[in-house]
Length: 316
Image 1 (spheres, rainbow, N blue to C red):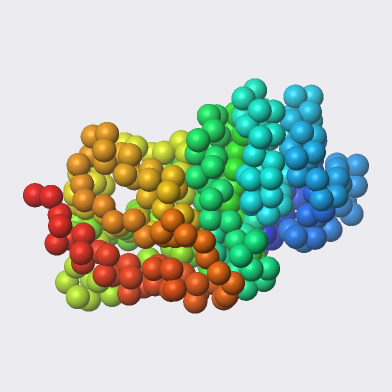
Image 2 (cartoon, rainbow, N blue to C red):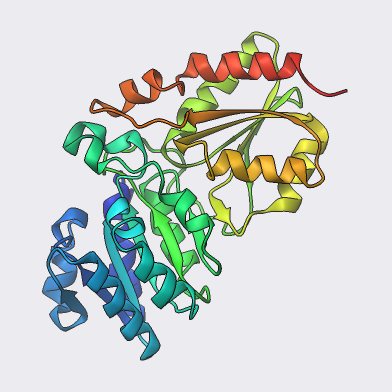
């Protein structure tokens, strides 16, 4: 595949590839075809597109019907329109019967803030779905990783949620890098002073923070947790056993997201000191993505400061 800079295009291109290989793949659109630049899919397979208009609850119900009939439906729209507007349908008609429906949520986090503002920033989506049994939840870091995550999750039993962004994400991984479904990934290890757990579209700033910390003599291990559910508890345990303190960084509320997931591992058998960076039980505001991340405590300096503080509090 060619290089993909946009998470939305990464989804679209992977869907095209999967549809070439599998006759059961269909796209359910809730007036969202243009959101993911899906016109090429419509042109090639018009009979495999179900356009419902702005009707997300109905869209999830249609997906449930298609999945129960042996098809593999993908529905992609703004993350909150799925996980909030159609939350009950996702729970009762897909999660409960454990159907193979693929949900792709756009504008995850603050990253879409400069396009449509607060109403289209979704900081709760992962937390909502973590409470639902049977869901696999993945948060790829860039367009190529969305593409690879689509391929990696195609045969997963039960529902899958893939979090994508605004379409303006920085590249993190070289083209063709496989997506580590169900496993953490060590992105860089300077040492075991502090573990930095992260995922999604802010991985690059975490790597930069780790580099600057190294220059100051604080040695970190940067860990990507791209699969939030099911969580790689064993892998996280191994990192915590070495570092004994951690910072989580997520473009999401700190409640029931990545930070909560790591806290649960700590509480259930991997004693460590933890600081969680993310939305601190508040909403965001309209603005440009990088400025918003800085304003809400996820700047490179904030990450560095948290690492220094948690190291001082480390359990011996």
